[in-house]
Length: 135
Figure: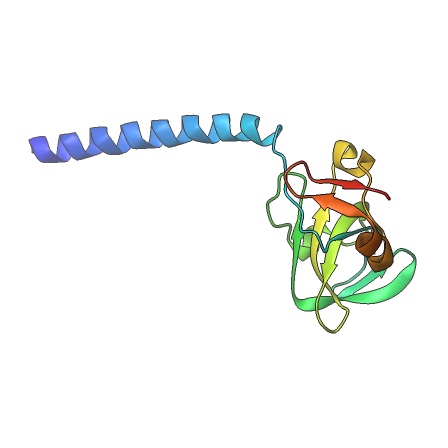
């Protein structure tokens, strides 16, 4: 009988601790600095019915295994994206389809970032500060 009471107490304490950890994690995510890959480009995207999107005004498709990261860097489900227009950083797969997308916060969108592969090749990237410098 004492073992059952101890187990219930331990589970209650664990649940309370995890609830508290979840609250502090939410606060920490507000100051989250996301690291984008060097091959990511900046663009404006309008999500249609998946896999259809318009990227920089041009109709294209999402790759079969695409991922969309929201402001908090969590994966956003496709049902939440229909009709959304956003400034994003994105990567493409070998077929040229959009593979990974990061919906940007206003602070992230304010940073200079290349919009074409030619710009990315000509500019210099610092992965630690996540900053591009033009020549």
